[in-house]
Image (cartoon, rainbow, N blue to C red; front, side, top):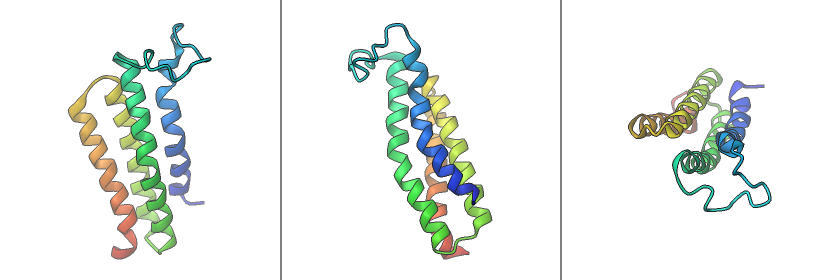
Length: 125
């Protein structure tokens, strides 16, 4: 199985992992996990923002991999670009957690362009 397919699984799991540290507080109430007051500010708000962005980025990435592979893109480059996407998502999360806006935007942009490259890979293969 292509590495890029495994990257789809990783991209699907990352948003869940992204918010997990914010739920470790004793103040977290699992009976009302979406309490807006809990997620209102600081690290918790940033973790939730990173999670939401992960869910938003996932469909485009997953479809790009499926299209890239299904339409005959070079599997080696699709795998490399998918790994780049995952690396950029991890960096994005770390930047979001640590409140580093500019590097976060750079990581997001690199991940976005990696996804576009995967999607269009059949054209240049």
